Image 1 (cartoon, rainbow, N blue to C red):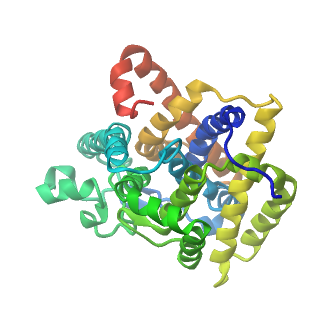
Image 2 (image 1 turned 120 degrees about the vertical axis):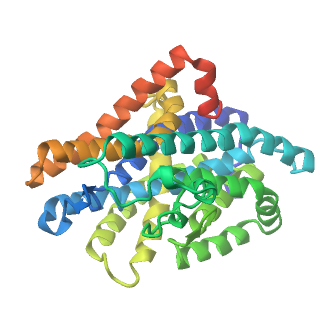
Length: 375
């Protein structure tokens, strides 16, 4: 007989600890993904060319474009798992209850933090004219009613030069897509319940064929990994017990795939390496975290876990200004200076985010709970 990977009461604590532990390092990875110097514009002028700094370019690509790419898919996986966790069936009553809960945990923070971004952009465009403002986006004061609406969904409709279809607080594309998945969760449930692993195989093949495809509100990565997380909850399978024995083998595969992605970048089939690396990376991150948590060497920190959403929600605009300010101040012209800034910029933003979260939580606990979705 095969091994029993079903969830048990004794496994629930380890599962919860692993998920809580992962929240903060995954958010750190997201901040590093957004620490991109290749499009810095000060006073309308491009400030930096990757071609002139090959060492920094390789380090940036290795971490922000390869290793940390596992973070967002893993967040979708965890979201799908938690959405259906301990759910017996999926009746209309359960669906409406979950929708109500997600209004509090997703929709209200989504509206608030996008409004905050619009306010800060307005203030920046009004009072920071010059070197720290790009000057390429439409001024907030010129927005029509339709522009304001599009800002919450797809800012490329407001600023056509933007390549990606993101809300004004760009990291919140994750929340936007997650809310769409929540609305259509009965479809996800039926697919997974009726077809099981065949549904995952179908969605996985679509993701493998078009890993970067997304429209405002739906993407192949969000659908595949949310459904995969849902599968483990719906069938009451403990993914940690399943992945734990794979750690020694997967660690080697993960390293080889990282090297292959790095070496073969630019090939027409590179996206297949990317997908394989994301899957191997997810297995590695989950299994490694479980390994050290079980041995008592790693422990989830409730403050870091709870503060992760605040960092996610606030970090984009401060990160842009920290990058622009430090570039304006230091004027980096060497590999060492750029590598220093690559570490310093996200570190400053993360530390300020944790301090801000502590301040808000101590002074305005109810308000902080609202803007962080009850976290």
